[in-house]
Image: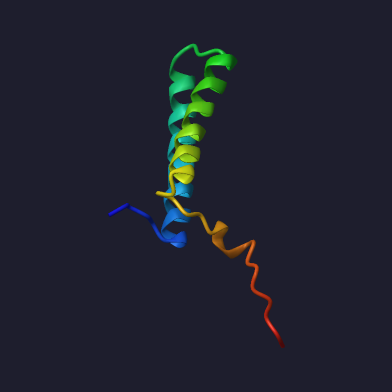
Length: 74
């Protein structure tokens, strides 16, 4: 059985992950002398983890319903 999260759960996991990694990057960079290139590499690797989880379909983002293709009739 393959692990797949529902769209809302995926959105919450992605948002939480992005906020936590951003906080940790700012904290780590302020406490040590990290250059801009190192910061970009760390950010790129953290985004790559999310990208890989979406590609193997563990995460199924629904983008909080922003791109809903259903047309509602009034």
